Length: 265
Image (tube, rainbow, N blue to C red; front, top):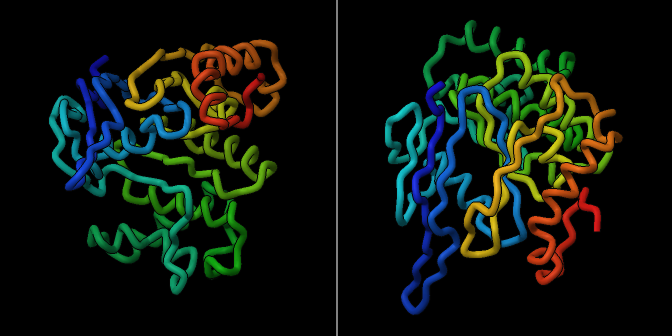
């Protein structure tokens, strides 16, 4: 099976007039079609920078990114991106937010509306089509954000800590919902999180980055059967995976005075 996404010897240095900061160095990864891959590491290791380089939002200083074997030089709407905050347009309803990207792609109104309604149903928001963002909860807003990203039918979905702004209970529900949605057509997903249990629960593989400048420390394959329910988090196998990932970054996290949720000390 050919790779869907490939990063070759990626590095990123941010340069100012009087200083420079190397965030990533010699990062090489491959992701297969339909894979769900998470990126994790201590704070400041370059997780979000790597995600943005893989998407095309940030140009690498060294190395290259390939999608379907073709080098990319910038973002396109065929690559969906879900941010930490929902970033919905407050003057547009749920339905109109979901159709926004399709409008930019000049998809006919009736076709865009039909697809948006299907996606609103998919993310469990039927009945809220006419509500505005201020009228729904943070978790519901993020569901709209996911529906909006899926509406453009992206080849790859990039997600940057999309559940960071919701409470712990909602986060659990959203993780299960994301897997339910992903399982329908198995889009390729690249997911950044600082929560170890979230990475293990969602992923086929977890890419663990070392401290800045970030390098791939290890890639952990998660051999938990799918489909997964939240009950898997109570298994010994799940706890062992979380503990394994934690041990890979423990020293860096402790020295940085950060304790990621889901870690066992």
